Image (cartoon, rainbow over all chains, first blue to last red):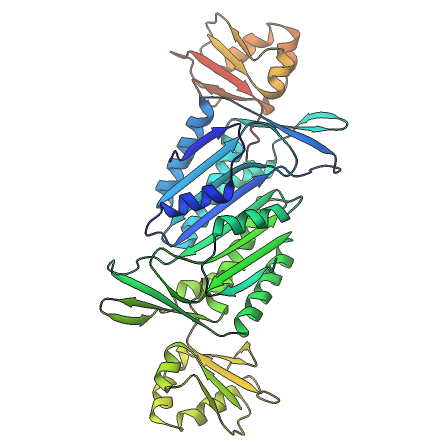
Length: 148
Length: 148
Length: 81
Length: 81
């Protein structure tokens, strides 16, 4: 199974998590994170559009994943991220990590998310009844990198 | 769906996670943790037996869950924990949390795990070729509570 | 009063459940009484650093009062998750 | 040199891809050249605090050298996850 996937198609988080876990022989802890399109502003989100930089996206995610695996002695790590047009409540992306002890699996997943958020070339745009707006990067997302 | 379950039967982590996520309308972040029986010592684990205190277990998990939901403004939290005899590699338990932002979902899941580990009445015994031994509580598990 | 034991405490005492009459005012007093009850009890309860207690299914410290208590459970540190 | 733009930078410049001749030694120099190219470029690149750059698909700072570079991408801060 390819541990980094960038795709337009929807995917089944539960099935991916089960398949990942089945392959992690000897791991005691598996952590997953799922990102969903929220109805962000005034409850009027029509769709979320995600643009990315084909080629660089896969490379950046691969690098971040390798760094997480090394740094937290993970037995495995999985990243799946979608692009294109998503409806409210749809799954945008997931990560999963496996390790012997729970602290590493949690830290590995948080590390992956923090770096993916500000270092992988994805840009989100919200389509609402009143128009389309690019999602602004948050200072706290950049600040989150400083803890690692 | 009952948010705290203590059961002998195996369960499907992926299916539970999907069902949980489907019910979390408006959440942007879902975190899951899965605990598996590792082959702990010299690779000779035959089985893991989990004893618990029926009645108190459900109450303790319920209290820990409520505390996590309140403390991290979670939109939902799920705890499933098995007891009885488990083979190596089997799922022991899972938690899942949902929140608007990822930091709360991660913190909520870690909080649940830390308290569940040392405050819910479960006791593990490893059955190996050389006999049966109760798993000793780890100082670091008790220490993990101090960060909250 | 109903007493419940779990894990190696249960194994060392030789039963998971017994009913006793006691005037103990606290968990600590109850444990002292139990240690006098048999060699098995004394052995099981010899290292109190490795013993935890619940009164009516709530975790408590050893100085917890037994006033109104119906059940006391004694067990090793928990190892769930 | 291949230039790629993404998100609102792409929208403001009006294209996601252009090919230019340049002698710029660094990303910063290239950006200054681009700002002189059209009003749309100048507007898109007016707030450099909101611009990020990748050279040959690797994130870099603005002082990064363009020696040997084949492609430069400019885009807003990323918002994945």
